[in-house]
Length: 138
Image (cartoon, rainbow, N blue to C red; front, side, top):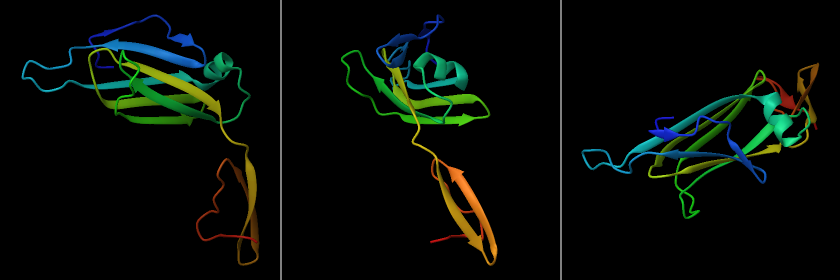
């Protein structure tokens, strides 16, 4: 994070949300608003353990709220790749924002059948898509 103040202790789990409290001056010396960023890389298996979720892909609901509980505008992304979850929150305004992360189990996996001429393939995933050149079989 680019916050001047943040808690280095493990994040707080309040209800079903992981919360990070950050703080920085709202304005820079040139009177422009301070723009915040926050990035977290965590073991997906650790996050599943905290939430008691099975070994399925995760889905994250991320919010940035001020001390009055009003959600702030921010760019938020979540990616899970090779056992690591990447959470990124950017372009929010400071004073004392709270980053809230709520993880869910992703939807069930489904399988579709794809064809390319006489070649058939089965594709399984949360949102399966046929490979390039293949069409979904009806």
